[in-house]
Image (cartoon, rainbow, N blue to C red; front, side, top):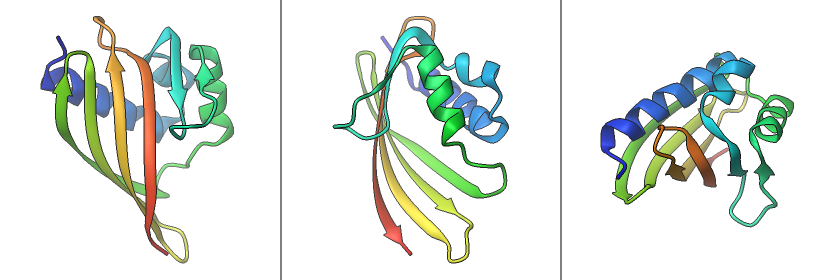
Length: 121
């Protein structure tokens, strides 16, 4: 059973990886056979290597964004997280996020799905 502390640790590690764009930081988040859906109905990045490659090909640079999140609910091994991502472009952009994260027993994600909606131009 996933606990709130497990989700919080994973979110902190995700934000570290998002900031560093370091291959090892990204790999540490996901199981070997994980699936990462960049949108609910897109074909996922399948497997940790594909996730790392997809992430790095479309990475955000440190200092270009700000992220805040809140764990909404946990059901078994699923965590539901609401987030807000603000990009500091000119003009700035903001997105409301819903993340659905399936955590394995070791605390890594075996599945990650992100839903996002633009909230500000």
